[in-house]
Length: 218
Image (cartoon, rainbow, N blue to C red):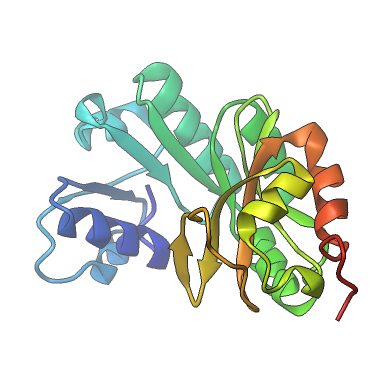
Protein backbone atom coordinates (compact mmCIF):
# COMPACT_ATOMS: atom_id res chain seq x y z
CA UNK A 1 0.00 0.00 0.00
CA UNK A 2 1.47 3.30 -1.15
CA UNK A 3 3.15 3.95 -4.49
CA UNK A 4 5.61 6.66 -3.53
CA UNK A 5 9.35 6.31 -3.85
CA UNK A 6 9.52 3.61 -1.18
CA UNK A 7 6.49 1.68 -2.36
CA UNK A 8 7.52 1.68 -6.02
CA UNK A 9 11.07 0.66 -5.09
CA UNK A 10 9.79 -2.27 -3.01
CA UNK A 11 7.42 -3.31 -5.81
CA UNK A 12 10.25 -3.32 -8.36
CA UNK A 13 12.60 -5.23 -6.08
CA UNK A 14 9.99 -7.90 -5.34
CA UNK A 15 9.10 -8.28 -9.00
CA UNK A 16 12.78 -8.57 -9.92
CA UNK A 17 13.01 -11.45 -7.46
CA UNK A 18 10.20 -13.29 -9.20
CA UNK A 19 7.31 -12.38 -6.89
CA UNK A 20 3.88 -11.29 -8.07
CA UNK A 21 3.04 -7.83 -6.72
CA UNK A 22 -0.06 -5.71 -6.27
CA UNK A 23 0.20 -1.99 -5.49
CA UNK A 24 -2.58 0.09 -3.91
CA UNK A 25 -2.74 3.89 -3.90
CA UNK A 26 -5.51 6.46 -3.59
CA UNK A 27 -3.98 8.60 -6.31
CA UNK A 28 -3.92 6.97 -9.77
CA UNK A 29 -1.14 9.38 -10.77
CA UNK A 30 1.10 7.70 -8.20
CA UNK A 31 1.40 4.63 -10.41
CA UNK A 32 3.49 6.70 -12.82
CA UNK A 33 6.39 5.99 -10.46
CA UNK A 34 6.26 2.36 -11.56
CA UNK A 35 8.43 1.48 -14.54
CA UNK A 36 6.75 0.96 -17.87
CA UNK A 37 7.40 -2.77 -17.80
CA UNK A 38 5.80 -3.36 -14.37
CA UNK A 39 3.62 -6.46 -14.64
CA UNK A 40 1.90 -6.29 -11.26
CA UNK A 41 -1.62 -5.28 -10.34
CA UNK A 42 -2.46 -1.61 -9.77
CA UNK A 43 -5.48 -0.86 -7.60
CA UNK A 44 -6.78 2.65 -6.93
CA UNK A 45 -8.39 3.03 -3.53
CA UNK A 46 -7.95 3.30 0.23
CA UNK A 47 -5.46 0.69 1.36
CA UNK A 48 -7.30 -0.36 4.51
CA UNK A 49 -10.65 -0.84 2.77
CA UNK A 50 -11.42 -4.56 2.72
CA UNK A 51 -12.92 -4.49 -0.77
CA UNK A 52 -9.86 -2.71 -2.12
CA UNK A 53 -7.55 -5.18 -0.40
CA UNK A 54 -9.57 -8.07 -1.78
CA UNK A 55 -9.37 -6.61 -5.29
CA UNK A 56 -5.60 -6.44 -4.87
CA UNK A 57 -5.49 -10.13 -3.95
CA UNK A 58 -4.90 -9.88 -0.19
CA UNK A 59 -6.46 -13.31 0.32
CA UNK A 60 -3.58 -14.85 -1.64
CA UNK A 61 -0.87 -12.55 -0.27
CA UNK A 62 2.19 -13.89 1.52
CA UNK A 63 3.20 -10.43 2.73
CA UNK A 64 1.89 -6.87 3.02
CA UNK A 65 3.80 -3.57 3.28
CA UNK A 66 2.00 -0.38 4.34
CA UNK A 67 4.19 2.47 3.12
CA UNK A 68 1.80 5.35 2.44
CA UNK A 69 2.52 8.83 3.79
CA UNK A 70 0.08 8.49 6.71
CA UNK A 71 0.90 6.76 9.99
CA UNK A 72 -2.71 6.03 10.87
CA UNK A 73 -3.49 4.60 7.44
CA UNK A 74 -0.42 2.40 7.54
CA UNK A 75 -1.20 0.99 10.96
CA UNK A 76 -4.88 0.39 10.20
CA UNK A 77 -4.04 -1.29 6.91
CA UNK A 78 -1.38 -3.46 8.55
CA UNK A 79 -3.81 -4.56 11.25
CA UNK A 80 -6.55 -5.34 8.75
CA UNK A 81 -4.11 -7.37 6.63
CA UNK A 82 -2.97 -9.36 9.63
CA UNK A 83 -6.10 -9.66 11.75
CA UNK A 84 -8.81 -9.86 9.08
CA UNK A 85 -6.98 -11.65 6.30
CA UNK A 86 -4.35 -13.59 8.24
CA UNK A 87 -1.31 -12.27 6.36
CA UNK A 88 1.72 -13.39 8.39
CA UNK A 89 4.38 -11.01 7.10
CA UNK A 90 3.22 -7.45 7.64
CA UNK A 91 5.23 -4.27 8.08
CA UNK A 92 4.18 -0.64 8.46
CA UNK A 93 6.15 2.54 7.87
CA UNK A 94 5.67 4.97 10.76
CA UNK A 95 6.98 8.53 10.92
CA UNK A 96 6.30 9.10 14.63
CA UNK A 97 8.88 7.06 16.60
CA UNK A 98 6.68 7.05 19.72
CA UNK A 99 3.90 5.36 17.81
CA UNK A 100 6.33 2.97 16.19
CA UNK A 101 7.47 1.63 19.55
CA UNK A 102 3.88 1.08 20.69
CA UNK A 103 2.90 -0.76 17.52
CA UNK A 104 6.09 -2.83 17.63
CA UNK A 105 5.09 -4.08 21.05
CA UNK A 106 1.63 -4.91 19.70
CA UNK A 107 3.29 -7.24 17.24
CA UNK A 108 3.21 -4.98 14.17
CA UNK A 109 6.74 -4.67 12.77
CA UNK A 110 7.38 -1.03 11.98
CA UNK A 111 10.01 1.10 10.28
CA UNK A 112 10.13 4.61 11.73
CA UNK A 113 11.70 6.36 8.76
CA UNK A 114 12.48 9.79 10.19
CA UNK A 115 13.74 8.42 13.50
CA UNK A 116 15.76 5.71 11.77
CA UNK A 117 17.45 8.15 9.42
CA UNK A 118 18.24 10.61 12.22
CA UNK A 119 19.54 7.83 14.47
CA UNK A 120 21.75 6.43 11.73
CA UNK A 121 23.21 9.86 11.03
CA UNK A 122 23.89 10.44 14.72
CA UNK A 123 25.43 6.98 15.07
CA UNK A 124 27.98 7.93 12.42
CA UNK A 125 28.64 11.34 13.96
CA UNK A 126 28.74 10.26 17.61
CA UNK A 127 29.22 6.48 17.86
CA UNK A 128 28.48 5.94 21.54
CA UNK A 129 26.48 3.40 23.51
CA UNK A 130 23.97 1.04 21.92
CA UNK A 131 21.24 1.71 19.40
CA UNK A 132 18.37 -0.75 19.09
CA UNK A 133 17.69 -1.74 15.48
CA UNK A 134 15.06 -4.45 16.02
CA UNK A 135 13.03 -5.95 18.85
CA UNK A 136 10.89 -9.03 18.94
CA UNK A 137 7.18 -8.34 19.55
CA UNK A 138 7.54 -8.91 23.30
CA UNK A 139 10.39 -6.39 23.49
CA UNK A 140 12.62 -8.89 25.30
CA UNK A 141 15.15 -9.70 22.57
CA UNK A 142 17.00 -6.91 20.81
CA UNK A 143 19.35 -6.55 17.86
CA UNK A 144 21.50 -3.51 18.53
CA UNK A 145 24.42 -1.67 17.03
CA UNK A 146 26.93 -1.25 19.86
CA UNK A 147 29.83 1.20 19.83
CA UNK A 148 33.23 0.05 21.07
CA UNK A 149 36.38 1.70 22.40
CA UNK A 150 39.32 2.14 20.04
CA UNK A 151 41.26 -0.19 22.31
CA UNK A 152 39.35 -3.14 20.86
CA UNK A 153 40.62 -2.50 17.33
CA UNK A 154 43.06 -5.26 16.39
CA UNK A 155 41.54 -7.72 18.88
CA UNK A 156 39.68 -10.86 17.90
CA UNK A 157 35.94 -10.45 17.85
CA UNK A 158 35.55 -13.68 19.81
CA UNK A 159 37.59 -12.07 22.62
CA UNK A 160 35.18 -9.13 22.63
CA UNK A 161 32.26 -11.58 22.81
CA UNK A 162 33.83 -13.55 25.65
CA UNK A 163 34.73 -10.46 27.69
CA UNK A 164 31.22 -9.03 27.41
CA UNK A 165 29.47 -12.43 27.49
CA UNK A 166 27.64 -11.28 24.36
CA UNK A 167 26.69 -12.71 20.97
CA UNK A 168 27.88 -10.64 18.02
CA UNK A 169 25.48 -11.60 15.25
CA UNK A 170 27.42 -9.84 12.50
CA UNK A 171 29.63 -6.89 11.72
CA UNK A 172 29.38 -4.45 8.84
CA UNK A 173 32.69 -3.76 7.13
CA UNK A 174 32.92 -1.37 4.18
CA UNK A 175 29.19 -1.71 3.65
CA UNK A 176 29.15 -5.52 3.68
CA UNK A 177 27.75 -7.72 6.46
CA UNK A 178 30.10 -10.40 7.79
CA UNK A 179 29.29 -13.21 10.22
CA UNK A 180 32.37 -13.37 12.48
CA UNK A 181 34.62 -16.39 12.21
CA UNK A 182 36.65 -17.60 15.18
CA UNK A 183 39.75 -15.66 14.19
CA UNK A 184 38.23 -12.52 12.69
CA UNK A 185 39.92 -9.36 13.97
CA UNK A 186 38.06 -6.10 14.59
CA UNK A 187 39.15 -3.37 12.20
CA UNK A 188 38.71 0.37 12.38
CA UNK A 189 35.34 1.35 10.94
CA UNK A 190 33.67 -1.99 11.66
CA UNK A 191 30.08 -1.70 12.90
CA UNK A 192 29.23 -4.31 15.52
CA UNK A 193 25.72 -5.77 15.86
CA UNK A 194 24.77 -7.69 18.99
CA UNK A 195 21.76 -9.91 19.70
CA UNK A 196 20.90 -10.04 23.39
CA UNK A 197 18.27 -9.95 26.09
CA UNK A 198 17.23 -6.31 26.41
CA UNK A 199 18.18 -6.34 30.10
CA UNK A 200 21.81 -7.05 29.21
CA UNK A 201 22.25 -4.36 26.57
CA UNK A 202 23.40 -1.62 28.94
CA UNK A 203 25.97 -3.92 30.56
CA UNK A 204 27.33 -5.01 27.18
CA UNK A 205 27.57 -1.42 25.94
CA UNK A 206 29.52 -0.46 29.07
CA UNK A 207 32.03 -3.28 28.54
CA UNK A 208 32.43 -2.44 24.85
CA UNK A 209 33.11 1.19 25.82
CA UNK A 210 36.18 0.18 27.83
CA UNK A 211 39.47 -0.87 26.18
CA UNK A 212 40.30 -4.53 25.85
CA UNK A 213 41.81 -5.97 29.06
CA UNK A 214 45.48 -5.13 29.23
CA UNK A 215 45.23 -2.32 26.69
CA UNK A 216 44.78 1.38 27.23
CA UNK A 217 42.56 3.66 25.23
CA UNK A 218 44.07 5.04 22.02
